[in-house]
Image 1 (cartoon, rainbow, N blue to C red):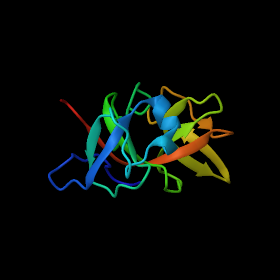
Image 2 (image 1 turned 135 degrees about the vertical axis):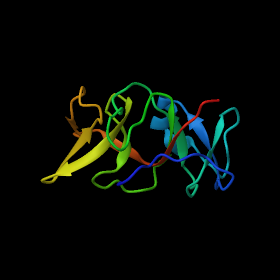
Image 3 (image 1 turned 180 degrees about the horizontal axis):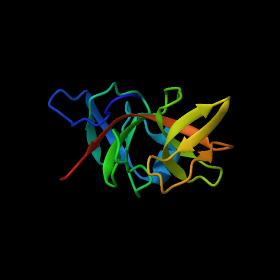
Length: 143
């Protein structure tokens, strides 16, 4: 993705999606925006809402950067599991232990890597991790 992907929810939003935990994100197929689960907080989105689209809050500082895009802790990500990830996309991946992570997908010479934006963190091979969604939108919520 090029340019800034940070946007604010506006009156032009296209609906709402559930804000889920990292654990719930790993089980995203249980999310059904056409049959919403009770008890989940909803957040507005400015992108198309599909069946499994969900929101996730950023934890940690691995995606902080002094450059164009930066995702501070507390940022809200709108994630689309029904979209194929391509080189440069910001993605949510789940490792074999079921833990989710938010990184940038880098494809180089046929190999896939998960790259943090913060240079203090190491880039890792995608390996057997599964990409479970592409980040479509991000914004910071203050209240």
